[in-house]
Length: 278
Image (cartoon, rainbow, N blue to C red; front, side, top):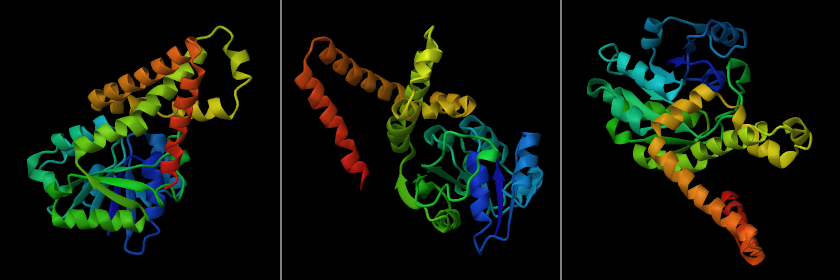
């Protein structure tokens, strides 16, 4: 099997590193609009070679590891240019708008997926082996993909030792708003809150584990996350509103010295990690 990867940053580069190790993968080639990314990806061995668009389209499976708006544009450009047996797998953090944008003539070629993994770093130099291992990958609307394409996606993600979950694209986007998209919005907002203070350097001199953990996501690519927020606007706004309600309730309890209520809210929040342990 020959694999093509469009986008050689953290996600695409890490994918290439581990796909090249699979015994049934003959060759992994890549493409990226950034010349420096192309050079770095080859130098680091993320792909066997960087190729042009036509060679990518000739691959047995093509991964789209690019911002979500770019995924929509690239999939639309593939109309009338794919072989019936080609599998296209998008790795976007949103799914509903991507799925809705796929031309009907190539719908069976495409598998819409979201690997629930990553780091706050980006670019090919951030690629690491094992990024996908033991992580969840959400496969959406699989009944709309062809049988061969479904089998190919399952084979590849299973080869990376990922845990496969299936759901509708709209269901995925609402869930992702709470556990991924909203936390990024909060992290950026936390960073900006501190950076807007006149004595920010004195404040940051005290920064320890808590602040660093909560602000870590603000290191992520603004280009990528602007696109995600745009595509999942409705669900993200719902998640932010519910978070605002919770934070306002905590604020009122603190303001009015209702310390029993504060304690109850802290204890309730702590229970989240009893679930996450599973």
